Length: 96
Image 1: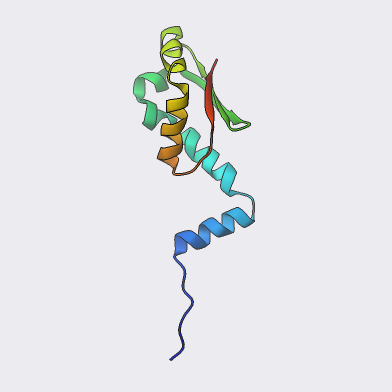
Image 2: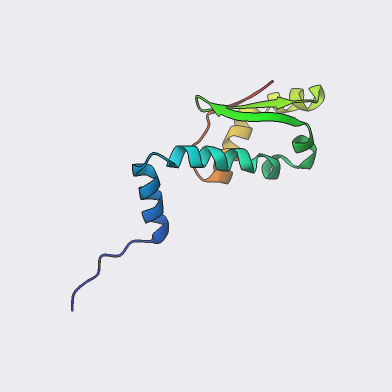
């Protein structure tokens, strides 16, 4: 009897994405899409624009009070968002 060389499908997909250079953009997309779920409806309502550049999540907020509160927790928010996605996508969060 011949032994089969098997791999988990998620590992094969991840390897395919990494080889073809789409793993990072996909994880960035997932992190941006996770923002409302992680931050909640109040912060989502005051989020005007969000993008990632140079491993920094840039978030434009329409509420100065929310901006001030979140600025104090920017490193913790980066960790929380990375954990939610399951990958090291960003190093910091900046609010504008």
